[in-house]
Length: 184
Image 1 (cartoon, rainbow, N blue to C red):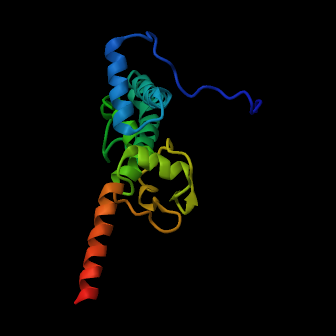
Image 2 (cartoon, helix red, strand yellow; image 1 turned 135 degrees about the vertical axis):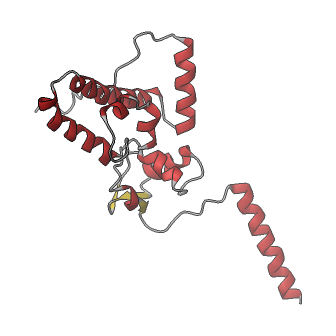
Image 3 (tube, rainbow, N blue to C red; image 1 turned 180 degrees about the vertical axis):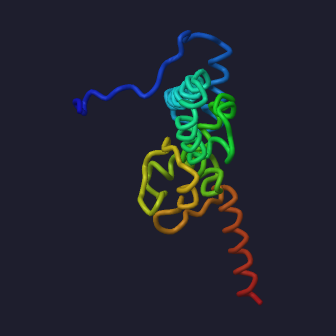
C-alpha cells in the first residue's frame, strides 16, 4: 500500500528544460487555461502520453488479440469525451494536450459561463463553491467525463459574475433610476 507521506509524481518533466520554443508554448497554454504552474500542464502531457502509448501498443498486435483491448481503451476515451463515438486508435494517436486540458473541471466551469476567466473558475473551485454529482469538490485539475459534465453546479446560490467596474456602473444606474422615480 505504501506510505502516504511518500506520494509519487504524477508527471514527467521535460528532457531539455531550457528549450525556448517549448517554454513559450507551455507559457501560452498555462495562461490560456489558467493553470497554477507548469506542473499541471506536465501532468496533462503525461496522461496524454500514457493513452497514446497504449494505443500504439495495440496497433502492432494481431487483430484477434487487439479487438477486446481496443474496445476497452476506445470506450474509456469516449466516456472521458476525448474522442467522438465511433472513433478509432488513430483518433487517440492524434489527440493533443489541449484536448486533455479541455476536460479539466476548471476549464469546464469557465466554458459553462459560471466564471468570467479560467483563474476565476479555479478560485471558485478551490474555495468550495462548485459541486460535481452533488458533492463539493476543491480539485480544479479533476478530469470530468461526459456523463458527469451536466452535473457541474453551484454548491449554494450562484455568485454574481459582473466585473467590479461594470457592477459599479449598474448600481449607479439603478440608483439614478430609483432617485428619478422618487422625484416624480
